[in-house]
Image: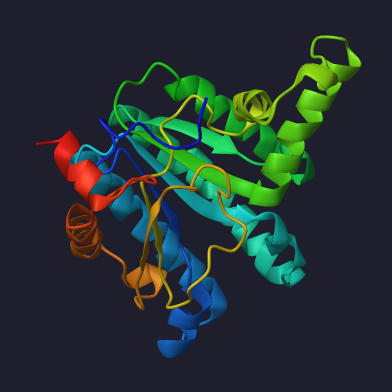
Length: 256
């Protein structure tokens, strides 16, 4: 299985899978002379609106970077606030998402979260598991390097158990085995990765899943990113030619 999406289904139109790095909450609060916590609260409200808008645009999968594995290094007070907002979101927002037929999933290392939060994540997933609308994937305590390393560890366990022969494993076969254990392996690869806040990096987010994604960077701080801003990103995406290693002439001939 190649990590490159199939050219027939991934060339034009709306992206099936959008990923967003929601950056700029603290800077938004500072720019508006508010406490830092106000930025995160405004960011949670912005996420609610973007989820609703993405669902209306019939996006299949929306993945958001809510809390990275590196975010544990932030000041204890800020981490505590983020955890409280997380609990609130699980208590209040999941019911709304379920009502709107949206499926909720979490990716990342949950072990560092309090048992209450871990249970809340499981409950949210079970509550919405049969929903058939958009899938909302929330990355928490997530890092792309952790994801790949975790998948490689699972492959190593298969080798240790005698289920795989390392001597007979080609590069392509290893890639196929690794792909099976990568987070979101059952979902379409990322087509469009958006980062707000003006920085031009992906900050260890979805290194495998976004290998062939189109990148879109905006100076808008996350609380200011709205439906119109998402539409602008979608319009920009629609103008791009996705070649997946081919030449423009090959792509044009394939769809002539």
